[in-house]
Length: 365
Ligand code: KG4
Ligand code: ZN
Image (cartoon, rainbow, N blue to C red; front, side, top):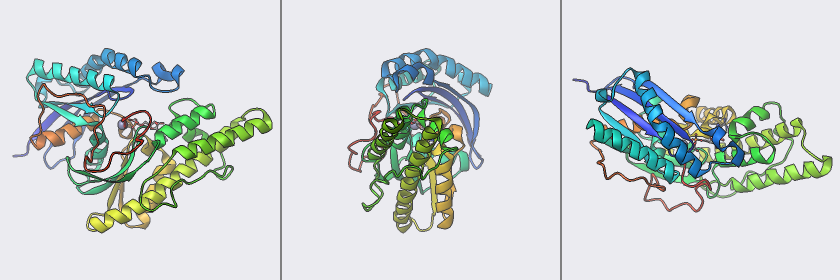
């Protein structure tokens, strides 16, 4: 008989406090019964980045509220759940600890099993939640703290093919937005401004395209944007809205070109290993960018590869992906107990060499 599982997910690894309930019956598409997110953007706005202490305190205040809202939205009580899944890392440790403590309290109080989830696995498994993608597939995980190509072999086995050697693209979007006077988070601001800009107005580099393989670098691109900005300021004394638009469009085009070319290479590598499963999925906040999605989708189509990109709300941080990743672990019998600990760093592929700079925001994703 088909088994139905209902799992609560909790996410608090960066600047979103989130709770969600996902239900899945074998052989059917999963259902997101509720998906609540409290974003902390405003709390950090004056500081130009996420302040870990402020984030941790806000998570501690909001977690209960979000859990209640998620249960209410799903029309369920704790007793109706099969398990409680929580992000146990990687991320800003204060926030991860708040989430883990909250989940432990709920598990201890209700007697429900606890499942610790890797936040990156949450992003990487999202295409299975949204599109029932079968393993294996190539994954481009591209967010504010991470950028890597992974082969998802199973819910617990990920093979890293390459990634950024310095900043993550989301981080570069955020920093460039700040440099040119656009609000945070930078990705959506730059995407909006880029619509009225000329992508050819500034000649920005396409770093590491001369190097083989699919490693990437974004910090030089950010510096080049800074130089272009300074040149404009010294020429005309400041930036006009059209300058912001042109810089945004040029920067977005450079990131898009790098991601597209490196994806072409990662796909070539993946297809030699898995010729019978031509599929690529993207996830993470930067995958919400329409120009990047369009370019990657076009590339995949030209190669006859299936392209999957989750809806925007499931690209950025959310708890439905944590509930789903928890569901995949629970089905495999991978359950934690109350000794579950919060981990600031937690690579998905522990066999791959540690990256020197997996994003200066720390190990968030
Ligand atoms: O996955 P995510 O919600 O959080 C973590 O990084 O964990 O990603 C957030 C990042 C931010 O850096 C944000 O600027 C970027 O994703 N982002 C975007 C867009 N929407 C969010 N970058 C480019 N274009 C977008 N539309
Ligand atoms: Zn994330």
